[in-house]
Amino acid sequence: MDIERVKCLIIGSGPAGYTAAIYASRAGLQPVLYQGLQPGGQLTITNDVENYPGYPDGIMGPEMMEDFRKQAERFGTDIRYGIATAVDFSSQPHKVTIDDHKVIEAHAVIISTGASAKWLGLESEAKLNGSGVSACAVCDGFFYRGQDVAVVGAGDTAAEEATYLANLCNKVYMIVRRDEMRASTIMQERVKRTKNIEVLWNSVTDEIMGQHAVDGVRVKNVLTNELKEISVQGFFVAIGHKPNSDIFADFLNMDENGYIRTIPGTSKTNIDGVFACGDVQDFTYRQAVTAAGSGCMAALDAERYLAARELH
Image (cartoon, rainbow, N blue to C red; front, side, top):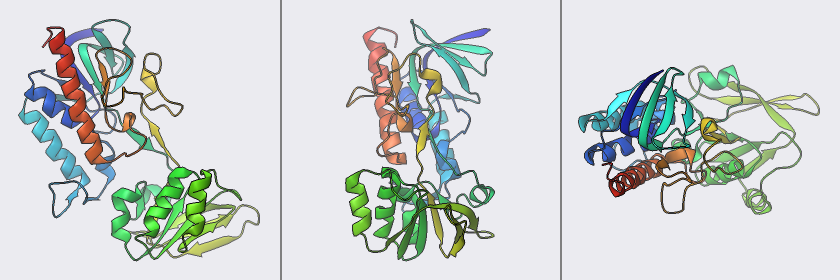
């Protein structure tokens, strides 16, 4: 295989990866960044971003990520297309295989591979993604102020999204497959106490309706097979996220859901010289601004790690 040695390798783009690249470049680490399967991350499938500081009129997600990329390139980041397909963190320098045919040896590795929302798999869901279909109530709930929306899911995430949306929306329908929820007791109690949340038990999504934007959802009762159409303007999928961390499983400590564990207050993993930032290690907030902040932390941690070993 072709082998290349670099000081600092960043795996993945998005707010975390690009911010890490900006700081690493300014610190003279000459970072190489591989963009991964989805250059720009989840924001590239987000239409309007209105909660990121510095954009008073909001900005389209893809445009925002293009701004991040240009800023990273301005300071000298070597941004490349490619996917990390294997890693070997057993010795220094660390080895990362790209596209199964090139090995990058790096003294410092920053992982910013993000997490992917789990989807239902409906054709209409994909068609209307970004036009009423969302996987983030905090990101997109504001656009449905005073309107009716649906949330699909039965865990803590779904309960949190539903109660958050209930503060903004006229009516929130929760679509729950069984006759009970998996959410914690306290979250279930919050749902029950919220008057404008209606739970549709024993129900699944049959179809998301609308030509160019969501205007309704067809729900199927799994016990009776009865179909029911509900008028909604927003449809939120809250069945969880999957961190993009599989290739690191043999070396890095992770929680039960596959999120990379970092030392609290840092981006450091259990392997010296390997740092994680953004949604791949954040199961709580999952926001662009927190991802960017953790990307800054990862670059600073990497710079200090290299300087202490006179590898700067």
